Image (tube, rainbow, N blue to C red; front, side, top):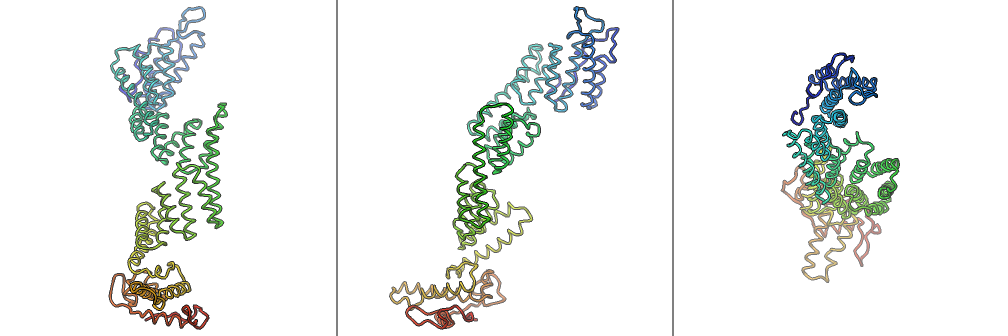
Length: 548
């Protein structure tokens, strides 16, 4: 017999001899074999199958017309002149099985081999071909049983003795893979299954085990893709439906997971399976997760941010193991906290999302944005690192946007390493002129030298430094031109130089903080405690003052 992977029709000596005089068939079994064999040799395997089928049907019809048994005996036990040649027809079945093998029709090949052996129990090649087809389907134990049967007929077949040893090894490998999977070692199980799939590339069962391994390894997308290939030919495979439902669930696609479970229950109901409480419970659980998530989405759209955070928090408690689903909820909460200007909380939620899904680009963006808004060298550098990671993760059309954010964040880092004027006044980077004035007045009153008379010399010195820094901050942030140059990253000493760029230090500004404060108060900035308020009743009106 040919080596594994090389299949040829059986030779004439397995056809028997039906060339007796008086045959009235249009074609004899040998002639059918010859006609189909030519097509097989030309690699027209489907054409060969069609001709073998015609020959088999013609021979079976002859037997029916004769009214005889397997060997053509009539009711009276006499052998008619035109005897049915069971051995020759068995060879036609065997050769059609070989043709099916060549188009990967292993199931049909197995059926033909069984029919061949029914007609000719000594047909060793048909038994061995069945063993090979079973092995290709990953049915190693059945293949081993067929090999044992064939070796009883042909005990000295060295190739098949070797094949039996090889198949026994496959049986043991599958058992080891199943044990590894049960022990929580999916990567080890997957490695063993890869070896088995080389021998059994058409095995649905082995591929389904591989899907389980991929899920255990956290490769949910890959597992789902593999299950999609399997479902095309196994829509009613209940185990596959359950596996796909779990896959979709772990990917965070609850709606599709529920539909798969419902399909499974319908299938099981048709089989009259009495106990599906486990899967009904899963549907209930999935629906709860989906409904609480949607409640959060609805609240967020209605700008009920606190309500959204609560609803998403409830959804997070249902199944803490579903990392894909939970990462989206954490990211949603980060967005809500950011809208509430609670950036510290937003960063924490985005970090939790990334802990569950390190490839979640939206979580990186949200964390970086909140880190930027928090300001400070450490936070801004962390934001920059997040944006730089995103450059390797986002599609080409998104990269220009991220590059812009990197440039902006790096400029902010440079600013933060200088004096942070916004922090000195206690305002955000988006503060308007009125907020800046109000913050300056409050801070200047607090640190004004006249308020420090009871303090120690060291405290007075520190307060004086802060007072000067506050004045400097207000002098810049109250001037739109200087503020714009400061925000763009121009060095502090170059804010008065319209031709200076980043890092070009020359020149500077001299500020008398007491004079600045006095003029601010005279323009309507308000009086100091215990003194007479300035004109305008403490208003913030008047022309903006700055040193040129």
